[in-house]
Image (cartoon, rainbow, N blue to C red; front, top):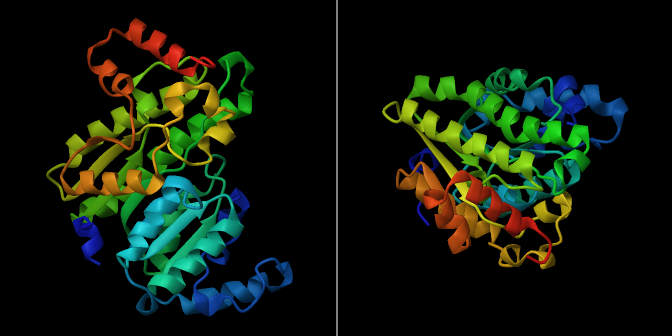
Length: 316
């Protein structure tokens, strides 16, 4: 698989607020246990010393939701192309293990930040911190997201708001934070992961589907704005994929015929990168049924809502 041009050129909220460098551990800075709080100030000094601009490659890919599923697939694919990485997700242990594996296997620089992006209040600080470390983000993969399956009035208030925060607000925030420098350099790529559900009103996943509709519309508009300015935008819309999404959402895939044929996360990532290379803005990737692929093109909105309800009804 050939890589797009940027590739060839080469918290918890607390984690970001206190000292994100503690979560971006190069091998030279891992002499003290990360869990020993008494060592954190000394570790921070060591890490800052080891992150001089001359010690790092400049252009990195930043991937959210990178500890598993589609995000992990992107991380592995980019690392195999020797692309330096910044991985962000909630699960610090998984990030640490994945980063160490990719460093050892591909001899590539991999940093990570453990953060709950849905609740982060310090996200605007991230570009400045990276810049002081000599790091530039030229590929942004907005992959982090989650859904909940239930009648809307039964979904917890916090879950619905956090869905919008993570699926929409974080994606928008990171794009706004890193896009200006991409435009200034006339070089960059933004990969937004939406969903085939974004084409439908989907009863029992109303907030999730609406959040992914935002991602689709935002990505298409943004792509048109920047298409002649050296920055490419692609929005990938996978169908049901073999990740922990269904489990977290509370979906029993065996009760939903159209969710039983799951796509492989690596296929989704590969097809998305290929779409980016080919200049596509909207890419339906992975396995999708005829209905989910073509119904949005022809059916009235009220019919789409009925189709969405049928897809998500148990044993439909």
